[in-house]
Image (cartoon, helix red, strand yellow):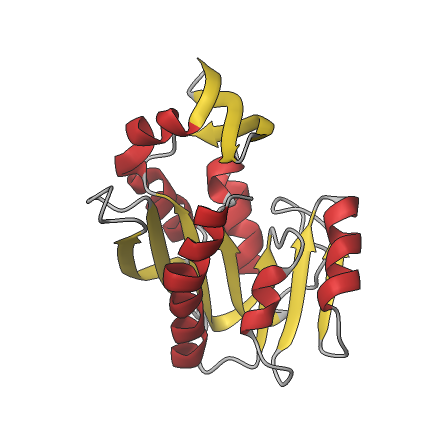
Length: 212
C-alpha cells in the first residue's frame, strides 16, 4: 500500500469511521473485507469486532497483528458472510464494493447479519472520479465494464491484476434500498485539494426494522 493511501486513511477515513460508530452507539461491528485488519485499531477493546476477508494470508496476518479477546478475524467473503442472522449492531466495508460484481448480493448479506436498526457504512471509490482513477494504473484494459490492470502503489511497487467495477452511485443506492438498508448520509472525500470531486464516497444509514 502506498504512503499516500496510509496518510489518507489517517486524515480522512478513520475519523469518519470513528464518528459513524460513535453516533450509532453500537457495541458490536462487523467489517466486510478487513484485509490485514488495520481498521480494527479504530475500535476500543469494549467493542466486539469481527473482521472478515476471503484471503487466508490476510486473515492470518490480521490474527497475528491485531487479534484480541474481543477482536477476531475469520475467513469469508461479502457474498457469504460466515455469521448468523442479526449478528451485529453495525457493519462497514471500506474500499471493497469497487471490486465486487454483484452489489445486490453483498447488500443482502450485510443486511442479513445486521440487527434491526443496525448501522452501516460503505466507503468506496467515488463514481464521479472513475476517469481520474484510470491514471492510477500503469496499464489496464476494460472488459464488460470492469477495469483490470496493474495499480501503481508508488516506490516501484505494483498491485497486479487489480479490478475496478464501474458501479454508478444509483446502482449502489438501489442495491442498499432493495436490501432494506436505508441511506441517510452520502459524503465525498479524499484528496480534494487535487481531486475536487473527492476520490471516495461514504454511504451510511441503517437497516429498516420491518417489525416497527
